[in-house]
Every structure is written in structure tokens, then in C-alpha cells.
Image 1 (spheres, one colour):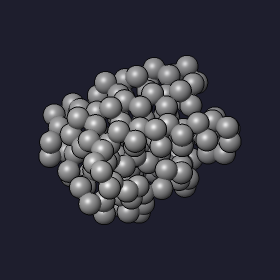
Image 2 (cartoon, rainbow, N blue to C red; image 1 turned 135 degrees about the vertical axis):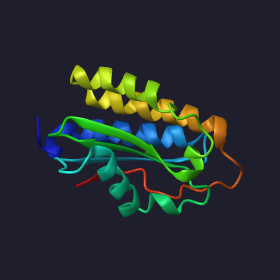
Image 3 (tube, helix red, strand yellow; image 1 turned 120 degrees about the vertical axis):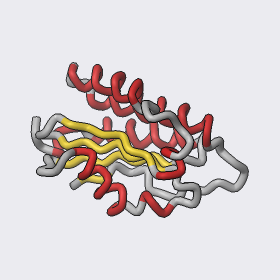
Image 4 (tube, helix red, strand yellow; image 1 turned 30 degrees about the vertical axis):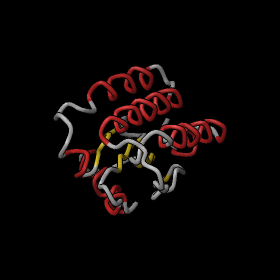
Amino acid sequence: MSKVENFLTQEEEQAVVEAIRMAELATSGEIRVHIEKETSLEPFDRAKEIFHELKMDVTELKNGVLIYIAVKNKAFVICGDKGIDDLVPEDFWDSTKEIMASHFKNGNFKQGLIDGISIAGEQLKKYFPFQEGDTNELSNEISKG
């Protein structure tokens, strides 16, 4: 599978967007998913580019998280903003990546994303709990390249 359009069905996309909405109810953190066909860059470097293109680096608490997927490369990255990286251990996202990878290996992309988003929300809640007056600073929609 190498087409972005075929990675998730419309119903699966809506389930992922709903998972983002639910995860963000417990945290002031912002979670985005970006899917593109492929990258010629190292996936982490491309994820950082997308992070800035999506203006994820302008959240008030610097607590945005991007789940980046390059379909044809069979690669994905979870990257957080400076506010997260300054507070969490270096291996913070490793267990989340392992759970997602096990789903992806079985072709279950929707569940891999939903589990990754849910775990990210739980992790973020510890460092960035939802506060009264928090607003949704970034779109929950999946971006595509």
C-alpha cells in the first residue's frame, strides 16, 4: 500500500479524529496526525519539517505531538515540541511506538493510530493536565501530503 488515500478509509479517519478529540479532553497537549506517500528525507527530519509547517510549534505551552507516517517508506515518527521534550525522559515515546508498530505490522493502521493517540493523551495528561479555560489550539483533522 503506497497511496495516502488508501491508508485509512473515511470511517477510519473519523475514528482517528475522534480519538484525538477524546485524548485532548484530559490534557492541554495538542495531538496531530500527518500522512504522506513517501519522504526522501530521514523520517524524523521530515516529521520536524511537517511539525513546523502545521504550526505545531506555536502552542502556548509548546506541548504539541505529531504522529507522522510515510506510507511507502513504511516509516512513522512520534515527535513532541520543546515543552514536552524538556520534561520527559528520552525514551518517553518508545512504548507508544512499539504498540503502534505491532498494529501496523498486522495492517491494522486505524487501531495503531487510535492506541498511539490514546497513550499519548494519557502520557501528556501527567505533564500537561487539562486546565479550566484550555482551548483547542490546533485542528484535530488528519493532514495529508
